[in-house]
Image (cartoon, rainbow, N blue to C red):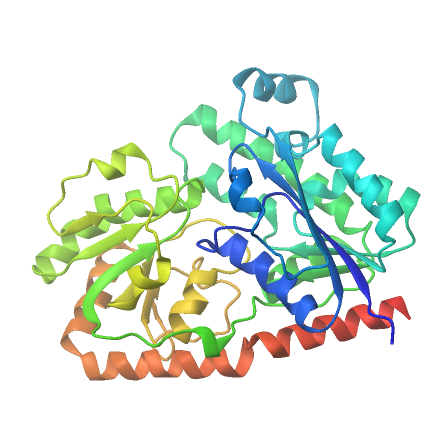
Length: 401
């Protein structure tokens, strides 16, 4: 039987595997590859997430082909201003449109002749006309988030009136862009049921399958010599992560220390802001970017995710649950994960609620351990990678015919 061929387009190189976006893209790439498909990965090597050439040469060698195009997607004040004044497109989509990437895509379509083209960011939908012109491939859009919700959330939370207006305007542009894009694909793969419901409330799409981030539970190590301390790890160039950590340290941490004076909190992540690396707050430890996320997490028991905006799914929460950790997060942080507060995780919203949840864990370690075990079982039942990819490939094959 001739293997299926898939061309996967990404708006950054899915490496290193330290944040949710990269992990989610890599899971899809590996899923198709393990199923015997010929996988051609065409990635943007962006200025914001740049990977050195010597590193790139050793990545994704198991695939049929891996290529990248260097793209300057840095924020430029004049570009943002011009876009705001003279365009209706979201500035994000403009920054990811590159002539060099377009040329390489057109060549890949002509030479590789894929059965499927899967797009890993809605902002790459600007290249869809090229796909339609040169290929009869089934087109698939992976929805890591409903993007406009992120900016809408930031607009409502921001105290600066000018930024409120800008983020609100951006949210409207992104929403319009997304809604138009959704209608152009043969299949949408939202990462959560809630995102799928949001899509169907706004548009009557052709085909859609909820495909959560798949966890290879065999590769998730259970904690060893765990300390009852808190931790957080995430990319700090994502504004929602920065805002959440800032809120937790400023608002919740004083109450945590009053209730549990010896409790400690460690956080790490790529692109750590200087305001965090210079922090001198008793009990708070900023480790900047760590060499191994796995090693950073291994000896810590309580994952704390103070998140207030964003759609999609928090991969780090799924991984923590698979490792039997105790998770304390907001309703936004747990969004998209079919977990129950008090059974699989602890939900908190206000500063005093985070403090109470942490104190409960310290005072009831046996029950907290049981909660972590329940979380592990949930991941095995609903988020095992082989089950998720089996459903995706079955749906795609139906569309190919």
